[in-house]
Length: 387
Image (cartoon, rainbow, N blue to C red; front, side, top):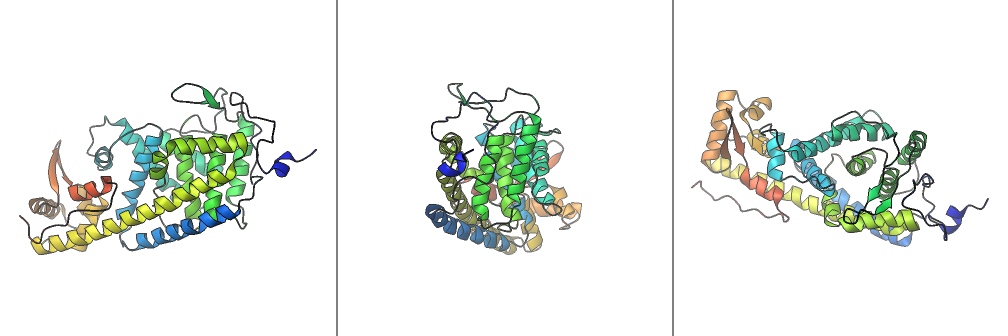
């Protein structure tokens, strides 16, 4: 039989359209029948790789990696959840992360589970490669329940405005497991494909398989980060990719559909490479802004509260922008009584804002929160002396 996929370098072959209302059990296995090293893709890969390398170096400029690990993945969680219409705010997220919530912000709780899933996925790479099991564990963390591949038929993806079915993913446990096994094999194949291009291919394939009853989009976006961690392009999960996707949501879904319906791999891969480059450069600037604000804050505290100043104290209020007394105690900055005094003094000179939360107190780093919530990377420096 003639290999149509190879002859026509894509899927579906001409004259054989995909019926979006029927399960796509014939989803082609990886690798794609398309040249992933086309001139355009190679041209776009180089600046994306440079941007990711610069991001990796920028992260190393902040010695306490918890400053980045506690913040960037949380912003990623917020935007990735927003793509699925789970909307929360930075304030709600960091308040929830500090355990100072009232228990009512379910969107913030779900976004925090997303961050926990990122941590779990990154940790799992230390003991095993990226696998289908990894994806199952990540989705289970996101949803807060133990999940496996979906066993019941009837899953469809619909236009949120018209209700029209735009895609019906494969169904049947055996089919889904076989597709995930192929996905896993491709994720760990040693060849000349650039990891950024591989990430783009794997992301499409995972979303096309759509193996879970819910959480596929968020799981797929975490897997993107893990592909780059496994390839050694990142040290920690700081590539804030969902920021770009949420801002180009229509294009993102249209290009996914273009691969399914017309085998248009190149536009999809180019989109993902642009997303990586744009996001890496933006995140690089954000990390440098955080570093500059840390330096400015340290100088201000040293000049205006020298008796309590230490670099460890500064790192703590950046690792925990909603700081509690226990945070300082846990990090060994001070005992409880001294920690309370330190935070109150930081509030007195305008670095933190004290807020009563039940029987406890929360100290909010507002200047830092404003920076994290802005689209640019500017902040108002502290004055030479406290007012």
